[in-house]
Length: 299
Image (cartoon, rainbow, N blue to C red; front, top):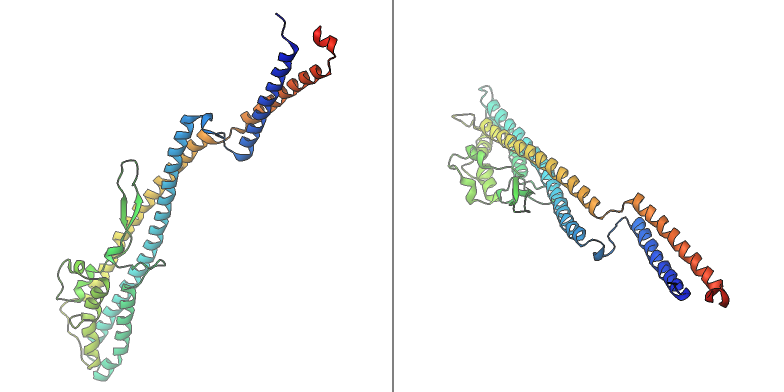
């Protein structure tokens, strides 16, 4: 059975169009870096890619939260160290006032130092981080560093310090006292109220007297800040482990996403060359048919 010349000509035109479209698609894949140009290319791959992109976006958000937690915890640790140092200086000042060689005038001269330390302690305990969050405010202490997807609840971490351990500076305060106070109120109770040992030290020095203490309360308060730093350090280690986990999962997710959607450059380049060769062959056939005379077409 002979194939009509018109059929061969139409087939060659169809082949030219098909291979030209294939060349254009492969060149788009090469330039865009993605092998999925339309949903029909691979419906299952597109579905998996959507899930992987969602997971990747969630991991990016977790990394930003982890960076926030890390930054705030670094500032919190510095604030705790500063508070501990000021409390140590309070202890040293109190110990200095116990020197019997100091008279009333000398004791009054130490009042300015005590007031300066009192103001510095208050500023440290009300200090905020670069984003405006109080570094000792129990209501602003948690940041999500993991979970919150795939059926896993949000994993939060304590990123700031606490003033609960400083209740030794006010004998009227009981365990858990800070839970019912705002930060400003709590700081007032331990630094400036009439029952505060800090305020009593300032007042007694201004009168040229010595403040009698039954124990090393200022030193105990300093140790409370050290314990807060230890607790924060444990959370920093926890944050670092969470950061490593997120980075590992993110690498695996990006690798899987790349396998699903990224262009295979060697394969795509070969497809371009193949499609061009077939298109040129079809163009040659079309050109040959186009130059035939009537007798050739009939023969």
